[in-house]
Length: 340
Image (tube, rainbow, N blue to C red; front, side, top):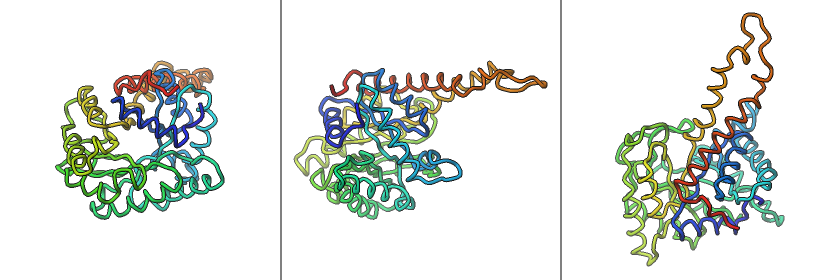
């Protein structure tokens, strides 16, 4: 199937909300990790979301270029070609874009999609995330309203974040404290500023103790009931059940019970990066340890070309990451629910 059109993406999100499941959103940084994600979704018979962060986009452009727009655009074009060979729908998304990178990442990409749509083409990406968690809520919502208007012109869905995700990602670090929990007041202010769908569709990353990075189960103090509280507060005012389409960030180390509870409150997208990074890297490490005298020219020998050929360990890495993506689909209940 081709990359999801805006209409198919909207149907994907509507189905998840209606039927009580969520899509894994897999961060990728290369053609290999992209292929692994596609394989994992296909094996799970799940539609899905593939996304790229600012750092991932810069990396994709090449270390001598380091251009986020070039890298993310190249990924999107490559994905359009290879994804067509898989029997699932895939939406392309850009992850966390803070204020200081808007003009070098999100805004130019929105402009590209506006120009494509004006020519009768599909947008380059299906959604983009504005991360205003580091600025005061009032400023966050003001910028969100401006970006939502621009996204709507290109038939793009916007993601935004209220509250703060702890830990560190792409050089942005946040302390672990009470700011990790979104309040009903924050949610009401959000609905007032950007509406509940009538001003353009958006998905909302509301925080309930989420932390980026690597943590053992139980180390992160999640309170999924926070999501229920904000849905009820805004729903009561606007007469709409579960008015927000919610996103779960910083889920590494979460228990399956916590994940499923969050989904029951309206989470339709869960970001996965740390776990798939490890799944991809673990077989490479095993290959290097097991074949050290083949990948290295030890004691004047010539090594073994078959062992240091990147394909020899790249295939194992892709398969392991694909398996972790499939597992995520099963955890989030999207497995077997692709649009046919």
